[in-house]
Image (cartoon, rainbow, N blue to C red; front, top):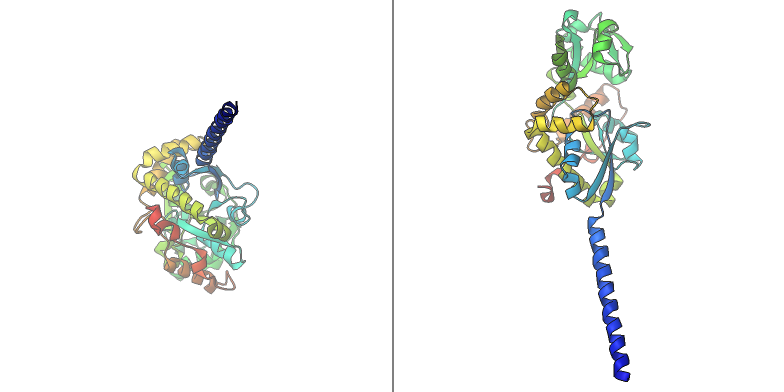
Length: 336
């Protein structure tokens, strides 16, 4: 009888151990499949500056890293504010915005340059006759009301002994260039990858004056990928995973512009397909350009633009650029 009882107890012990081991395996599998939720906030509505992010999501690069990524538009608040507050772990911003944020001790950090060189400048319809900064005189400039705009106009006009005070600067906001330039303004700030390509799609002759052709200090990074200092300090592994996938997304976009354009269109069907394709083909060679790798940021570029802002009294102190950006998450051996 005693032997029978012992056998029964032994049987139940074996069953219990088996159930426990199965439960542990199931929990282990569940933990393995569990994804880390990440929010990425754009700087604006979806466009070809963001294609690498959508590619990384669509082709499963984020998923391979154990990340469940949601891409959102800024809505209430800027991408800088949302990332600084931790409401989004990553975002798209600009070197000038990061610089101004760091002046105010807002702890955001640029972790990659989306495009290696500044492809922005001043656009005008060809019939306005604006071919050089000298031609800005006695013309109407439509901008968004930032003091940086007048300083930038002056930097270009000084090269040709032109007077910035002869430019009538009006605030046109974010109005479409082709709409506002038809009646209200003579020229406006735009990006070659978008305004320039849209001019080709619409078959509208334009003149384009690129900032970096006139002043090397204006060849800054726009846009950039940002995170905050706390994220880097507390979740370095997640930052590495995110950047590994993002880097693959932009590298794919560089090598496969039409396929990448289709992925962007799938996620933003409201965009003009022909414009997206032309823009993507243009940016394919601009994402990395002459850099050693996609996303690389140079200290010299950060210092040049910071000094320019300071010299033009747009900031009252200089930032520590070594804290404003890092290449750590692009050069780490684990990312290759």
